Length: 91
Image (tube, rainbow, N blue to C red; front, side):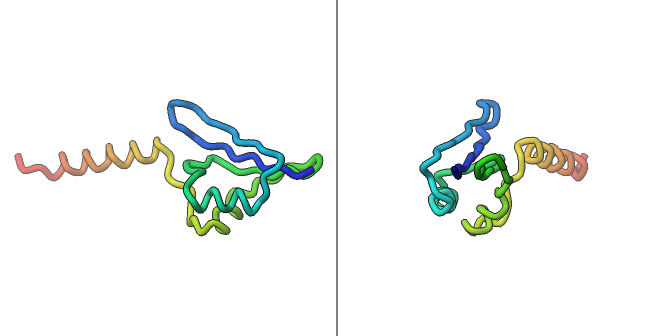
């Protein structure tokens, strides 16, 4: 039996695991490419008794270059930008 687990991160609202044994790899790629699956934490493929992380493979197939930066990184970038603005202010 083959199945895919797509875990989507909703930030403070938590995470959701989408598991459908009837979905194919092609359908997962299609949903990622269309934007239906966004903010993906990871994608696992289960075959019989083994599980493999295929996140990068699926993103590459869907022509998505990289996983978006996490909220913490975005917040740190905003703080750094605000700090730089204050540092360069004319008194």
